[in-house]
Amino acid sequence: MAGDDRDQGGRRVPPSVDARHARGVQFGDHNVQHNHFAPPVRSAYLEHVRRLAPQTLLDRDAELARLAAFCAGDQSGAYLWWEARPGDGRTALLSWFVLHPPAGVRAVSFFVNGRRTARRNRDAFIDVVLEQLVELTDGSMPGHLTESTREAHLLRRYAEAAEACRRRGERLVLVVDGLGEDDGTDARGASIAALLPADGPPVVVTSAVGWRIPADVPPDHPLRRWRARWLPRHVGPEERRRAAEEAARRELRLRQAERERREAEQRARQEQAAESERTSRAARAEAARRASTLVGGWILALVVTAWFAWGWNDPGIARILTGQLLLGGLGAVAGLVVPAVRLGAAYRPALRSPAAWLPSPRAALARGAAVLAFLVLGGALAHDYRLARHERLIEELVRREQQLPGFGEVLTLVFLLLVGAGAVVAGLLVGQSAVAPWQQRHREARRSGLPATRPGHPTERPGGAAG
Image 1 (cartoon, rainbow, N blue to C red):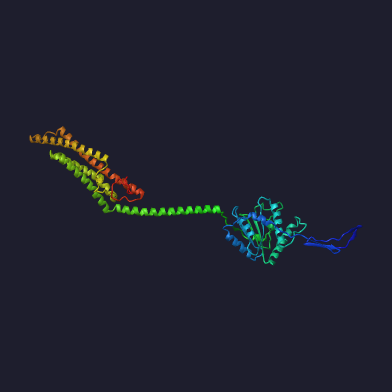
Image 2: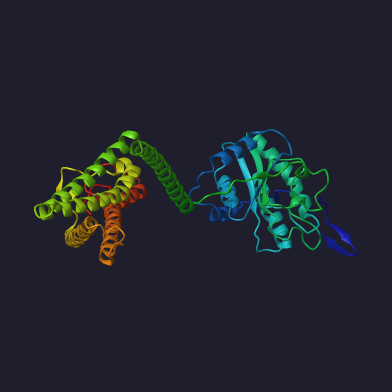
C-alpha cells in the first residue's frame, strides 16, 4: 500500500508498499526508475539424486514400464506404493526414474536419509520439495516463511505446480523414497506421509516391508486406500554372474544325474539280459559239458597213468587205483560240475587252450606231487591189501573158515578206505579250486556291471584285460 508523506506524532513518515507476494518492485522519481525483481528459484536437488543413481539400471524394464503407465494415468490423488527390503534396489530404481522420466513427465523427488532424525527429515522434505515446486511455477520463494506457514505454502504449491505443468503439456509426479526409514514421526507427532498431497499430482512412494502409515495421516487420505506392491529384488552383475554359475553347475549336476540314471538303467537292462543268458538252460548245459569234459579228461589221464605205472606188473593194483581215481572224480564232479552249472554262461573255459587244462606252475607242482604220492601210497596199500587177501584165500582153501581176519589185513583195508575217502575229498577240493577263479570273475563282473560270459581264462578281468 502506497501513500503520501504524513505526520505521525510530529514525525514525517514516507509512503510504504506491501510487496510480500510480488515478484518484483518498480519505483522511481523525476524520470529515474528502479526495477527490483527476485531471482527465480532453481533447485539443485538433482545433483544429490545423481549421486544416488546407478550408472546403468539393469533388469528393471518391467518396473519402469509400470512407472510410465502410472504417470500416464489421469486419476487424481493416485498413489503407487512399493515395499522393498534394504538392498533390493528401490533407491536405484526411483533415482534413475527421476533422472530419466518419460516424455512429458516432470518429477519432483525427495529421498529420505535414514541417518537424519525424523524432525530433520521432515524439515528437509518441506525445504527440498517446496523449492522444486516453486521452480516449476517460475516463482520465487515466499518471504517470511515460518514453521507455522511452511506447510501451508507446500500444500498450496502442489496444486499450483501441477497446474503450471498442465499448461505446458506436462504431467507432474511426486516421488518419495524411503518412508519409514527415519523415526516415522517427529517429536510433535508429525510425519512426512502427512505432508503428501491428498488431491493433486500422482505420487510414487517406497517404504520398508511392513511399514505402517503414521497416525497423523488423515483417515480419508488416499495413501490409506492404496495397497503396497512388492518390489522385486534387484540382482547386481556380480550376483547375477554367481547365480548364472550356480545355475550352470546345477544344470550340469542334473545332466550328470540324468546321464547316470540312464547308464544305470542301461546297466540294469544289460545285467538282466546277461543274467537271463547266464542262467538259461542252454548255458547251464554248456557249462555242465565243459566241466564234465575237464573232470573226465583229467580222470582219464590219471587212469592211464595208473595203468602205465602198475598195470604191467599187477593189473589188480591198477584196478584198485582206478577205483580210487573214480572216487576222486565223483568229488571233482561235486566240486566243479555243480558250481559250474550254477554259474551257467559265466563258466566258459576255452577247452582248446592249454590254460584251461593246466593250472599255474605252483598249483601244477603241488597237484603233481599229490598225484605222485597218491600213486605211490595208493599202489603200496593196494599191493599190501592184495597180499593180505591172497593169504586169506589160501587159509580158506585149507579150511580155516573160523579164523578171523588178521590185524594186518584189517589195517590195510582201513588205510585203503581212507585213501578212497581222501581221493573223494581231494577231488572235491581240486574241483572247487578250479571253479573258484570263475566265481570270483563273476562277482567282479556283477560289481562292475559288465558281462562275464566271454570265453577265456578265469584270471582275465571282466573287461578283457589279463589279470
